[in-house]
Image (cartoon, rainbow, N blue to C red; front, side, top):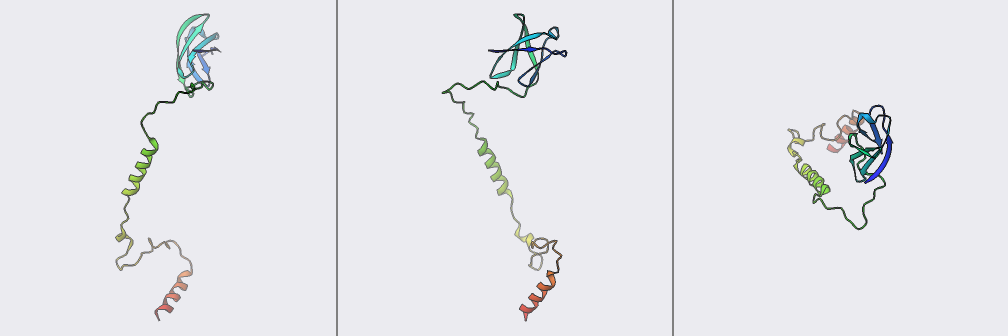
Length: 140
């Protein structure tokens, strides 16, 4: 167990490493000793004048491990058996393969590409006249 001393606020809260905890109201304005496991900042024991005052109730916990707590050397973290990257890749592949292109919708009734799917949709440039002249010259 690690220990740190903190001053209890008027609202019966203490702060430890950016986390906020509620303590007994009788401790307002007093210095208390917070004892905790550096690997679990959810459970904090409160002591004042050598007497135990129970556990601090977590209000806002953003940090769950003390920044100076280091993992023991030589110990590996236990494997969970879940390969999250593979799960995401499999879902992406399923989504990708479920998309099918309907080639019949790409062609109009005459068998030509429509303006919507030809790639020139929305281009109202004056190039149409030049393209018509080029088409007329190739037909002759």
